[in-house]
Length: 71
Image (cartoon, rainbow, N blue to C red):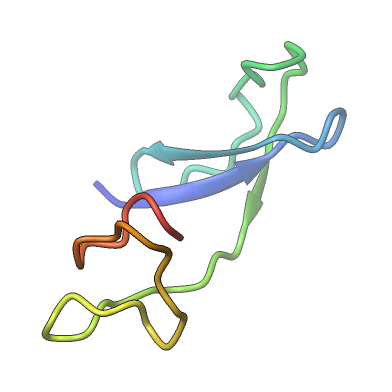
């Protein structure tokens, strides 16, 4: 199943969900404010380089190459 990003039209919180293809968010509930009916967002695709690089951004001190904590 693919990952999709949904936004709450009420409070603006974004959430990423693993869901079936074609999910539109209208039956989803915002975990922050409880609003029913989230909006599906088009999100950018990110790919790390072969060495586990930062995709052109500079890493923060302490990054060990996976960039999980610095981006």
